[in-house]
Image 1 (cartoon, rainbow, N blue to C red):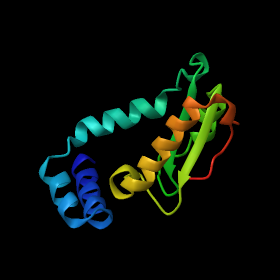
Image 2: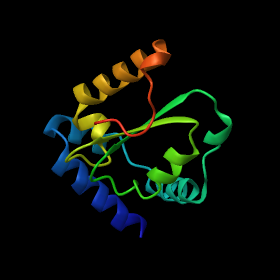
Image 3: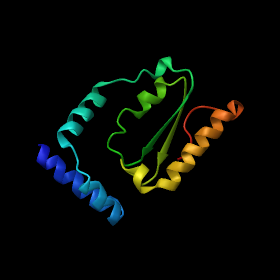
Image 4: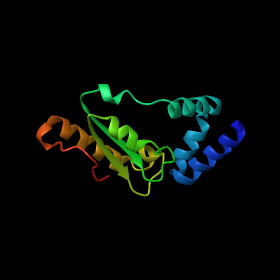
Length: 124
């Protein structure tokens, strides 16, 4: 399974990332056995978001296969927002850098201006 996961990851990088970035990602090595364990741990974990009083922004690509529990994570937040990047997958932060940077800037502005926070979903 590890080799297959590696081939799938490499193919995904080469298909979804700009060529130079894909080459760098693959050349850097992908610790598949670690990734497999990490994904299993994340899947089995529920976040302690209910104890955190501050704002939380969850940012996902609409095509990210790891979005399965995003509504549960959002519901656990005292002050949560969900931003979903349309037509993007798991590598949104590498593919759509400017849009993700805008989301981070928007989150920072909302934290600075508590009156502007209304909670709930926000357009991605």
